[in-house]
Length: 198
Image (cartoon, rainbow, N blue to C red):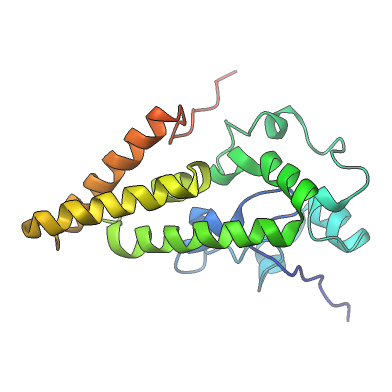
């Protein structure tokens, strides 16, 4: 019986997908994704050409470690930021791989862990049941300092107005407004554009 390949860091996919910041990584139940080559991954995603080449054939963690990167697998939709992909975290896939190419996967995961920690705070304390995708996108695209600032500002406002402290819907609205404001100032769009109809 062959042993399935296991990556050291399932929170970053071979292709650069930021699995640790993806809404499906935080889903509860059978639709939860374990990350790239994570536990039970191959039962949910039996085939992936990136994994076949990168992990199975070349025993690499990510495509950025390959001498042929970027190869023909990286088409224009990924190279331009994957703006029409349904997976929110594809918007930075190629940028992630470029960072790893220049600084190494461990350095990337260190920064990603900071983002995961901030995302976890947003999901645990400010998600009213409808904002998971928004927070995942914010955690992916905004600078870490901006996310920290938004959380600090929201918490300060909640301390001033104690009546809003336990209302999850109000807390979500407040944090999202601050995040959207910071994103607008940085010219970052915290939503996906729909794929054009052919």
